[in-house]
Length: 491
Image 1 (cartoon, rainbow, N blue to C red):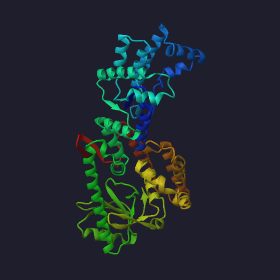
Image 2 (cartoon, one colour):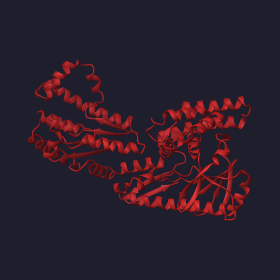
Image 3 (cartoon, one colour):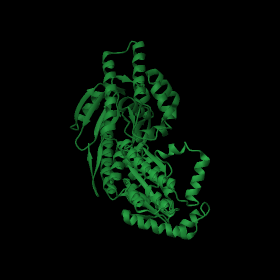
Image 4 (cartoon, rainbow, N blue to C red):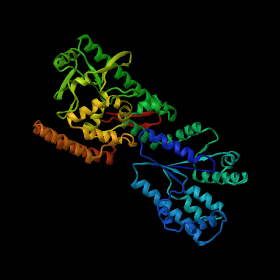
């Protein structure tokens, strides 16, 4: 997606473009800011030209306003470069959001100011491929003059004339205007509201935030309901799900506490606005597993189990509950059970709930060994809380053979910006091989674990392909924008 900012000098294009870039980056988007002179192909051509000769021609063109075929050729080359750049960004780099600080329309305004007014050139630049979104920023000539007087030598009449020409341009292009006379925060808010009036931006934002499990965080903590009226409806959907989450936690507490059965919440809480997608994981004592299941059965629960140490509890009107007697993935253990039973208390709803002190390790292991990728919600939680007991983590990684995978995360934690963030496939393969070798050396490797190894590697590969082609993640609830006031949630 290409978002372009155009406008008269001093209107704040660069400042606002970088604000919008930061906004999308905060929510895990692959976003790139590009300036006017960041040409697509011409930047490489210009590097081949002698700097003194280039500077001389630049002064002749921009300062002395000389005419000549070479300058007409330059204008045509700029148009070709912009067109090729557009197709490259649209079709080759389509997964990214590009924030363009100025576009061909601004080039046209500059060329016409320099005296290159030509019907053919104007037609070409007005019909250059149009970006997905064009934001026209403008400010009163006096404000523009005051903002630029320390760096530019133009008089007030220049800014007045320039703004008139821009107004004529946007009338032809039928582009909405945004006055930037207010402060940066107020102007950014107006720009974001205009951006989110486009269904493509709205759906892209909701889809990415949902995949990263930060949509509720964005709405509640960052208060983004001002962006679009449909966000208020989405807030209601998430609030209802949060009530269901609280109701499920209270139900677990009531049932198990009444039987005096100890339990701990796992992987289903964050220290910010967060909602699990489908289920709530809890840790229960292995010796009391049958009592736990019986207690839930008394409440008319449907119970099943597809793997050892883990059960599925379905009760009408509540989220799915998954009791675990230990934490394993595909018959592989990664952490001592007694560590998981060390806990802190957190408040959920109106009750105090035990959460494992090493809950972050479980979240990290799920990303490394179950998902093969990190969501932004996981990353934020891990980055803030994981290293509270680094010595214990180091011992566990060495004991259970996931030292390399942890070292990769530790060395890359501050350089991951795009989410969901897939772990490099060669690293995953390396981690699995390391685990198998260590189990083989200890004579604890089973045929089933070898089968699981090949199965998981195949799954991880196919998940990447599916995400790249269709944008679909495993374990994901899709939120679809339907109309101005409606979203549809697909489980």
